Image (cartoon, rainbow, N blue to C red; front, top):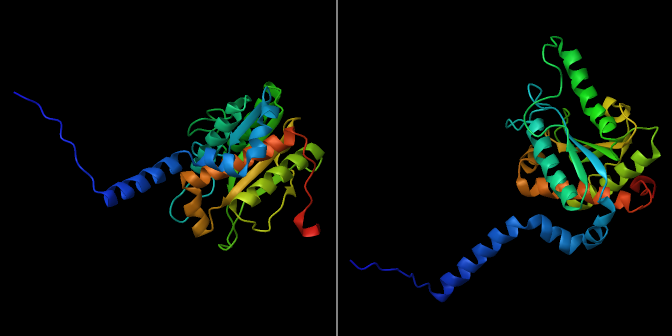
Length: 253
């Protein structure tokens, strides 16, 4: 019995449509690299400065602690982990050693701690201790914001007030985030958060947006937007190690 291979003949118009669809699919797949080659060539040229650095990437919350939850049910802990994994990939590709505080849906507290406050403190302490254990150069914690005002939007980066290096790192990341996602007018803020003072290394908390804003909640769940945020954080890290100066606060520039 003969076998036949059937070839479908496409008309010129169909070929054009298929080519356009293929271009869209390929574009979506390589989006982060397209963005870096077209808009951030300087960052790629400086990526060697990250090689050999030890960086702790901390996806906030996890396990029984979902963090904040959007109206549609999007959980902060899931957004944090997705963006942190993408950030980790960029850093590793540049030659950095990356320590993830978690790579799945769990927290770092000890089992058997009944009071939730104690459990939460143990979790935060364990995250901070990793920076000391690995003698990290940087500690970057990824979170999502949420407040009663639904119109608030945009990323914001926090640093410990006693660290000038942390302020410079935070400002460089904030500048990149504002360029990538539209400038919401937000700028870096000093805060005495536990994960920023529980170790000695340069550190920052990146609140990547607001789950309390319906439009931003949708964006934060989209892989393309998550890639954009991860790349912006990475670009800030590269510029930090390249020695870029502290950017001026736009409000007073």
